[in-house]
Image (cartoon, rainbow, N blue to C red; front, side, top):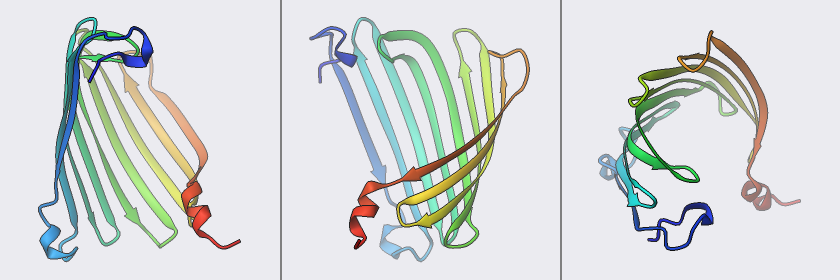
Length: 171
């Protein structure tokens, strides 16, 4: 398709984005869990060329959850083309303690190959489901980044809601 990101300039060059996903355990009807493995590419030439490659895996078994994603970017677009080269990954582990309470841990790593700077984030969080489509969240994040002078700590509290779930309920 046309690489005119954010309507900055029409007919700004070509772009291709594609994704493929496999479910190697699909024939076993969740006996060994649910595994999805995939890859994607976003490549183009819009005021400069860029290539973003991605590989990912998602596994769920009973109350356990695992997610992993690796990305390598040789330039990218975010309003305009940036020629910086990045690579990084994240992994998330989760466990449903009860039907309503979930605990999660996450590690993020990003390396700017152009500048040589790294950024790492360690996260731990809880999600509590109040009712279908309505969750409350608490998350602690520790950031160790070459972009900051010292370790950064953050605490996030929030809610998440899905209007589609509310529409299913009878009022």
